Amino acid sequence: MSLVEQILDLTARVEACLESGDWGTASALEQERQGLLARYCDGERIRALGEQERNLLRALLERNRSAISRLEQARADLGATASLLTRGQGAIRAYARNGPGSPLMETPETGEWP
Image 1 (cartoon, rainbow, N blue to C red):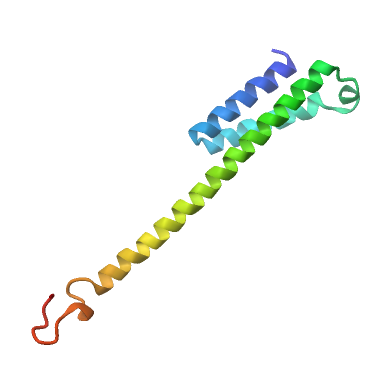
Image 2 (cartoon, rainbow, N blue to C red; image 1 turned 135 degrees about the vertical axis):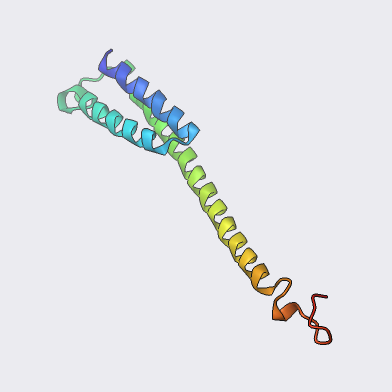
């Protein structure tokens, strides 16, 4: 498999891992991919790239931007979910403190839950 084919294969695998939420594997594959990209774009080679290779790199750059955008959205979604969970836990604690049997919920006449 050529260096370009390896890069494209790793790119597809990273994208698949990101889509499935397998962040650890995506990170490991991305590190490997970055090493291959560095070799591909090394010194003399980058200056000698033809139009086809430049187009390939532009396409990879666009795929990277798209993946980053999806990751930023996923991070925002996780933050929102975490915020909801935190508020939900606070509501549960408040209910436990102030629900049936708490002094706040007893009636003065009977001392029982209304």
